[in-house]
Length: 185
Image: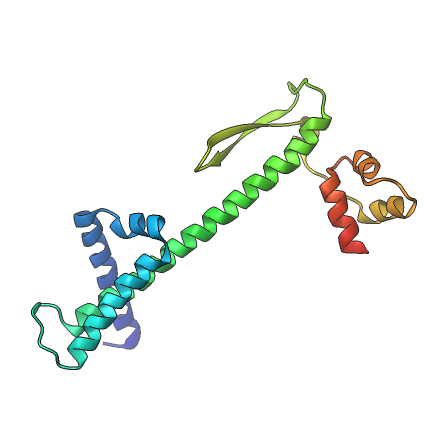
């Protein structure tokens, strides 16, 4: 068997074990990881590492049906599951940052709009902790946010316009104007 075929076979064995254990135990690794974090993964991997160390040193084994190969596959499985959880955390953090940015930017624009939002649209933001949140998106934002002319922003800033006045002129938030000014100084 060539290396690629063997690699694929081993990954399939790890995957099959993952499916079987999730069937028997539920997704206990994921639940534990959410509750205790990376420590859970480290403890489980350390247990496997210690078992591997004992087997490699020839210590007597009471659980005779687990081989070095099984232990290595379990260790690899824990590494993959840990990466899955870390990726999930990263995705959740990115999603939360995006939702917060949307809430902040649209709240700035919505505050400037009059109270008649009939010509706008509503979007639903999902927050795992707070649940779904409906946000009004005024028509001028819903159509498309046109790029802000940074040259014009800087010209107005150099002409001693206040950031609030520039934001009103450009149709964006003061925080966006502040970011542009800081980036172009």
